[in-house]
Image 1 (cartoon, helix red, strand yellow):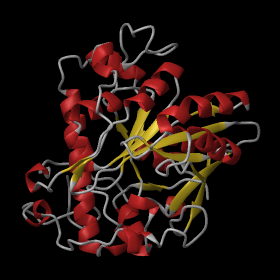
Image 2 (spheres, helix red, strand yellow; image 1 turned 90 degrees about the horizontal axis):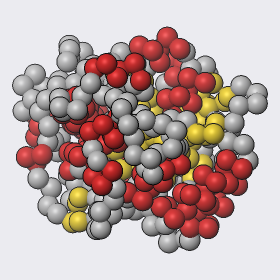
Image 3 (cartoon, rainbow, N blue to C red; image 1 turned 180 degrees about the horizontal axis):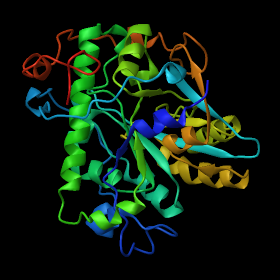
Image 4 (cartoon, rainbow, N blue to C red; image 1 turned 180 degrees about the vertical axis):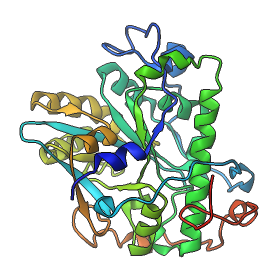
Length: 352
């Protein structure tokens, strides 16, 4: 299936990314960053304990009630689960992706070691952030959104298993996710450091979505595509939530990567040795002639490889998450029920 340039252009939203006038020399090499315009080097750097995951009761008060821009449904040729991209012969690009998951009863972490490495090595990457993670880590979220190396996609509101949600619950979750994303971008754009003159140096931001656990069914996949979101899976599994060593992660990624690969890792504290493995992965892939792109850039350079279902390595291998992560609360989020017009992404009549 071919990624149509017309759709990609239609789905592009302006990212609030501004080039820095001067970037800290030891933080970046050959790029200027919007992040450096708005934050000092010390503010961008990691802090002790930031990677920790904290258990806390779910607070409905955090649910966003703002607005978001409705997108046209994904056209037939791009519907489904995008696993990789078929590039033109001779091109050797891969996309490093990092999930920022956050469950309802927790505040997950921020693995600054990963972000610091990407900036230091001048490596592009894509982050998939749960809406709740964005609001619980607003400053870090703005730093990622404001950095032109990075692309930030959606990862549901609170990382519930979409295979076990009904249609109303899926649409409610997506509405909260989109509102959270819009809220953080709006706050970034309102900062005093915002400089419209730098918009010529911005990074295009195509709306991307990754299913929690990489698990979907036909109904949830359709709901995501109807909301105008491209469903991004992967074809290379790092296995970084496991207790394996950094060297094992490196070997797993480097051995499986090929031109057009989408590689999945975690930057929310669940990648146990990801920060240690990442410099090794970058070095090895570069040695093999690979360069790095965001998922959006990868899609613009070739033909999306699309499956009809979501899976890790082979069809059906992530059904195990139905048992491991059942949905305990089957009620729609209160913000959806009290949103005024009762509408949600993909529902007729909504204009936001």
